[in-house]
Amino acid sequence: MFDFGFGELLLLAVIALVVLGPERLPIAARLLGRWLRAARAQWNTVKAELENEIADEDLRRSLREASEAFRQGAQPLRGLHEDVANAASQMTRLATGAPAAASEAQATPAEAVTGPNAEPYTTRTDPAQLSLLDPDAHPAKAPPADRTPSDG
View 1: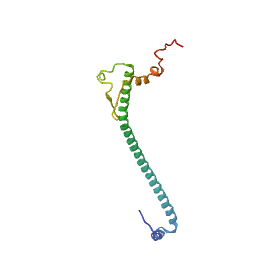
View 2: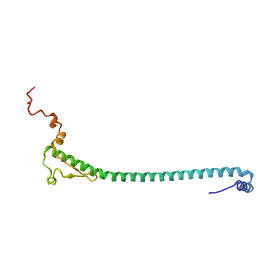
View 3: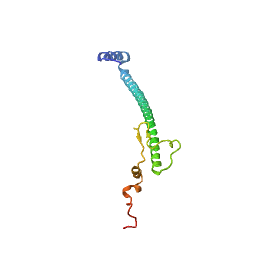
View 4: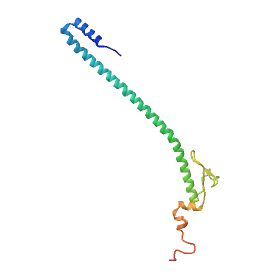
């Protein structure tokens, strides 16, 4: 900003000595030093405040962007949650043999069920698969047809 060389400073010292005299020059130099220190301290304070404001604004912007990204990322998850809940309720209805809702009553069991981001898959009413949902109904645990529980 200001570029003072040694020769220029020496010229200013000589002019100050001539104008102020040898008695008042040390007092003026001390006063000038105090003003420069106060100006530097004030400048550093203003600079630190500006840097803090810039950092705060960057942090606010980052938080805003992160919350927006979180909101955008949560939208597909809500849809996926609904799809999973619907598929689970449909599997439960198939396993228990409960009638489907009116809108789903026209759907066939082999009809493809898809979600917004899912691969299509088909539901099956295979008794072996339904028995996996209920461990007590598993064919391997069922007693043989020719034996009765009282046979030892």
